[in-house]
Length: 83
Image (cartoon, rainbow, N blue to C red; front, side, top):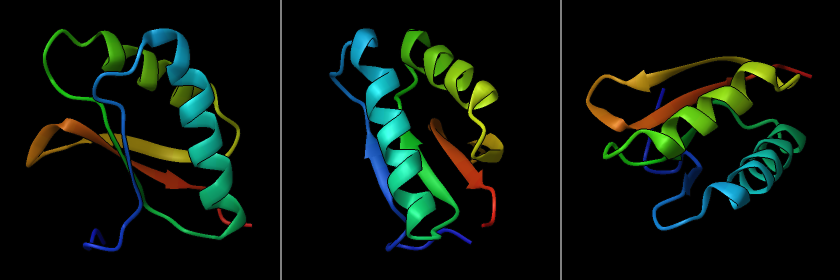
């Protein structure tokens, strides 16, 4: 369940080249603290960042599942694997 305390990573204004490092670090940090779900904010304009984020999430070994937030298509909700 999402709350105001759910960790968010805001990628607005970031370059595609930085997305992998930022998303990977965010996932690893939250996995270590056993926090799930997490939210990645990528915006909903051109889908360039969205596509890159989803590509990373599909291949990441710590990601259990992910989906676009139905209430805000500029966010992706990520469920991490349990330790």
